[in-house]
Length: 112
Figure: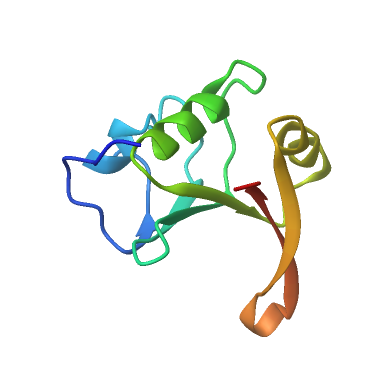
């Protein structure tokens, strides 16, 4: 995995920021309200809500590959059924993590 040459903030990452654009997380690809959550210490990016303008055209796959190519793991908490099928095909598996007020929630990550 390569090193990312741009600054990576901790926390919320919205559409069209420099890092988001580097990863292809742009307003012309995903709807407003979609967001990522970066945890630099764990080198993990949570994709906790995402909605593509044109589902089924590969935008999510390109996003995951771009994030992983910068040396981060991708995690998807509480995916919808359709997303579970995609994640399962790509080698992601669920486990449970503390979701704060929500209690334990399913989080899907690629098997390491």
